[in-house]
Length: 64
Image 1 (tube, rainbow, N blue to C red):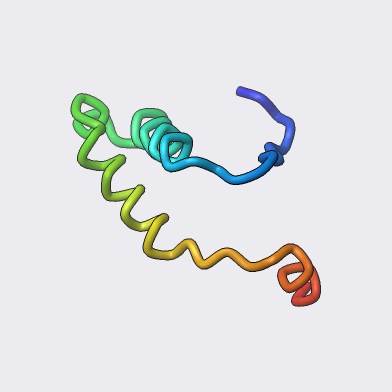
Image 2: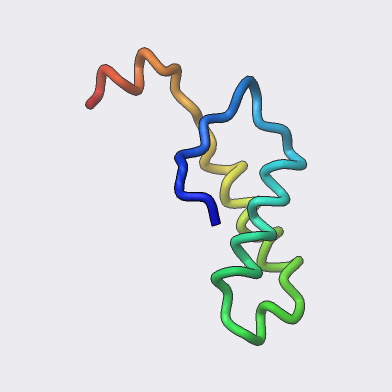
């Protein structure tokens, strides 16, 4: 696993988000969920899309 911080260039596509959700479900899920990780990954994806009100970099950095 890479130790560097990932900085995306441009917009992140839905496919990339789905793949990351699947990776999280298979890497960190319990054994019984790793056998069929797609429903868990779909739950993660739904949660991300529901809570993805991204702020501009200027707004986000001014709150720090």
